[in-house]
Image 1 (cartoon, rainbow, N blue to C red):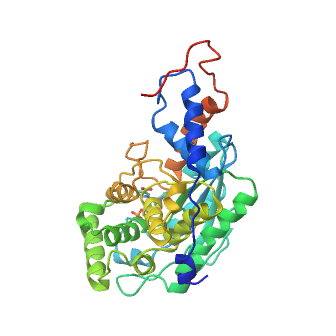
Image 2 (cartoon, rainbow, N blue to C red; image 1 turned 45 degrees about the horizontal axis):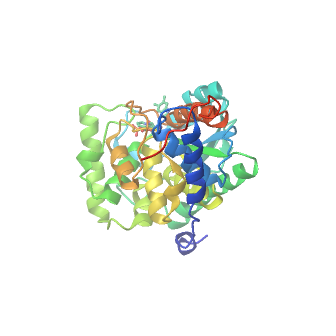
Image 3 (cartoon, rainbow, N blue to C red; image 1 turned 135 degrees about the vertical axis):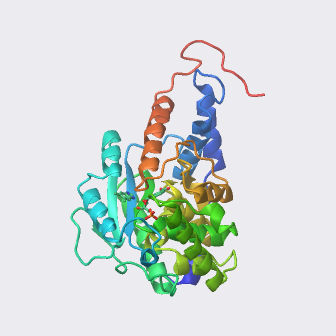
Length: 352
Ligand SMILES: O=C(O)c1ccc[n+]([C@@H]2O[C@H](COP(=O)([O-])O)[C@@H](O)[C@H]2O)c1
Ligand SMILES: Cc1cc2nc[nH]c2cc1C
């Protein structure tokens, strides 16, 4: 796929009719009108994306893009790149946080090596490595155009494959030391927001570390002098293989009409990248939580998506998205087994 082919992809609009039908089904449930709040609108969005008001969300999976970031050499994270491979290995055994949470609700986790800085194959992790970590973006662009496109295609292809395997809802997750630096840099460039406003402590940084992280991002943004609409150049220059892969997952979700749940700041930045590259993609996005990292709220605003969980989560891996899976499961139980006003012989409430 070339950059031009990517930007010419056309996204089908989800059906407004089905959205209305789901809302009508909710209105028939014996409960106050709009009683389930955002979950009514979100399930209507899910039905519309899936093309039916009788949808089933039983088969769910999280795609976790694992990759390293050359910018870690600049002292922007508390640990070194070796931690990415260690956590990915734990994920491959379903022993990391996301594996445990997903198991509790019967969702599947697919960790993907899209760019871990190691030459070893990791058990339980899909090998889709584009390269062993990106370049240090303070010195040179993190990725080439070809690497960026290849990572986007990995994400798109995984969605195609999981749809064929019968999944009806996917979520995004990631693991990669340094990826809150790449995400903050992309977020600042896409939004024009000040670096100090958008950059947080990631997995845990001292005051001096945070100062350094902000300096590094500010220096890079000055060096590359992006325009806000240069999405692809921003992604390949200061982004990462995980962000590009996740952007591919969102684009694949829209193309193959499978809704995709956002997770934390990295995933939310990837979502905005996807929407800017292929407009219309956001119609297939389901927000989950507002990460503690300040860039997340800003990106959600740009996407006009309102998350239902606000719990200062800052874990990544897709954990917040899996929490959302659990909440959606509860809403779906009510929807699928609905007890209606007519079941209890009460006249249905009308909308004014
Ligand atoms: O999801 C989030 O919002 C989030 C916020 C802070 C940290 N993280 C996770 O922490 C790692 C990145 O932290 P850092 O400090 O190395 O940039 C990466 O593996 C992320 O999954 C994730
Ligand atoms: C241990 C650890 C686990 C993680 N999971 C996601 N990001 C992480 C960062 C660290 C450091």
